[in-house]
Image 1 (cartoon, one colour):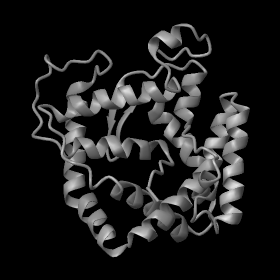
Image 2 (image 1 turned 135 degrees about the vertical axis):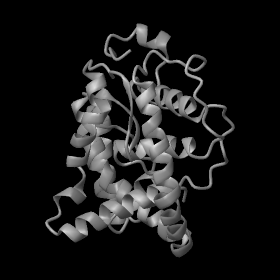
Image 3 (image 1 turned 180 degrees about the horizontal axis):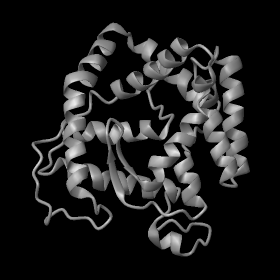
Length: 246
């Protein structure tokens, strides 16, 4: 089964962060790749270089070890387990966005996989046709009309914006692992979840780009627009008064 879990907002960011650290050498061609949504480009580029060093020194060796030590079937089961827990947060955000049908589907997925999927290690819900959605609190605020604000490159976490940087706290608070009383168990589960997610992207081919930073930024901005607008085009959005984000 393919590993496709994205639980917290930080984890959807990890794919974009991974793409950025596998490209060619970064250039500082600000004028050619200037984006008005990135007013703090100079400082953001410095954080980007810091994140690359963290990946090279710490994250990549750690995930390489995880890949070698953990069989593929076990990684898939771990992915399914955390994806199942994540359906709780997704259901809440779907409900906050006024999508009752998706919210009911998401919470139904959780109960089906928890009971018949042996605690979520097997994705039975998808096998019977219940689609997995991806919603976070940043998307919820976007649905409510909150603007994204300037693009930000966060230390360790990677690409974000002013709105998503703060909503990450709210999404994290909804993660079931946070509610555990045992500090060691809580830290262990969160760490395993992040390492497992990050390792899922280590087989992606290198990106050919003259400016890794600009590629990363533009990919992230387009991805978030797509997620906030539920995949609708700008033309479709102009005819839909429910969407006010862009």
